[in-house]
Amino acid sequence: MNPKKIALTFLSAIGLLGGAGQAGAQTQTPAKPNVVILATGGTIASRGADSLALTDYGLSKGLKPVGVEALVAAVPEIEKFANITGEQIFNVGSSKLGIDNWLTLAKRTNEILASKNVDGVVITHGTDTLEETAYFLNLVVKSAKPVVLVGSMRPSTGMSADGPLNLVNAVALAASPSARDKGVMVSMNEVIGSAFSVTKTNTTNVATFKSLDGGDLGYMQNSTPFFVAQPLKRHTVHSEFDVSGLQKLPRVDINYTTLGSDGVLIDAAVAAGARGIVNAGVGHANMPEVTMQSLKAAQQKGVAVVVGSRTVSGIVTPTGPFTEAGFVSSMMHTAQKARILLMLGLTRTSDPKELQRIFEQY
Image (cartoon, rainbow, N blue to C red; front, side):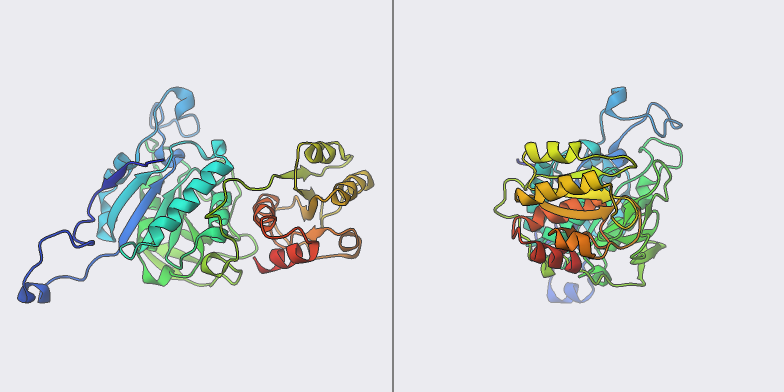
């Protein structure tokens, strides 16, 4: 892939402008940070038929998405905070993304952050799976420099569109020295969320992203970050995971438990080649006995089993029957994030005790 690079105001930052004499250098203003925007599509890059088309928009209506050049040019205020370059990595809604997109994005992000001329990265993304991409990157990015994911709940053409201010705040956050070594962050609706704890809680509301248990990292006020917390879970440069040589990830499926569930979908996942299964149980990972038996059968075939909960908050701690069966407890991970961690964990080990360590540390 050769993504199109759009240079906007980067020349002075990388020393391509003519050098001034010593006297001139004494009067220069401090250099602005250099931030790269990686665009992947989503609502923030979508158009609607009119200003009131807030949930019915995009390619399904025959309306082409906005490219990174137009996205950046529409918000010139971002140049107040940083010198900007942009790349269009792909341009699709986040519900259509796949593992190959993740690997492409992660590898490119690491390449960019390795440059001494880059101070931070902003990734524009659809909100449907934004929390999943953020958490994946949180585990595989190899830099302490700020990485900020941002999107919008309303299309660029919508009345009171939230994308422009979200983008300004994301750039200001990525450009701030105070944002270093915070792991991958999500900046939406003037709130800074940690990739570990943030989740989408509402289908359409602009305040959809919440950190129900971990709490917010901080807040954006007048496009200035104010941090109130520090992530304690392992992330980025502190992570043991590396995707530089990976072309795919192990298959992991999620089984959603309901009253009267059986093990048919678990058996099907094993037959489809799943190397891991996350069971989203009821309450504190509880499940019908027939579901438990299918999970035990899967574990005996070498499939890693993580037991979690379908509830939106709380911790699933290791307990007797699950530990005795060789299952891994999901701790505070939602089912979708437990799947990500298990996929990466399986690139390192299949030992349940080691996988449990991973779930407790990340």
